[in-house]
Image (cartoon, rainbow, N blue to C red; front, side):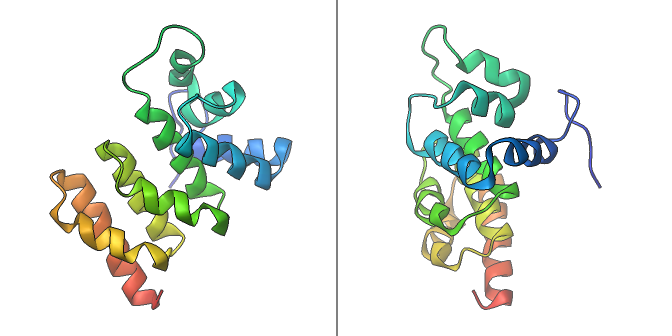
Length: 147
């Protein structure tokens, strides 16, 4: 089931279209930059991944909710994966922002990132129920797949 987002297309459609424009490797590189750097990265990539909300992160005064850039970078990896993203996903599982941890667990589950099992196991005691649930699902999928 595919639902259209508030910007007229789904995040998956936006990412797939950007892969056609830039190439999958360049999109992964842009996602990794958003996850690992705090400079905001490429404004075009921010808009592709964040939709209209991304405009708030381009220019303007500094924001205290920059974790959204990491969430969006990880969301990009849901739909365009490369194994070179494994270290960033593992690091994101320990992020201070719960939304980042939750999205990293979803990415680990979708792409069967077995190397992330230690970090996922640590999230069993996460204070945020959504993070615990995403981690438990990822562990179950990874274990079932023998990853």
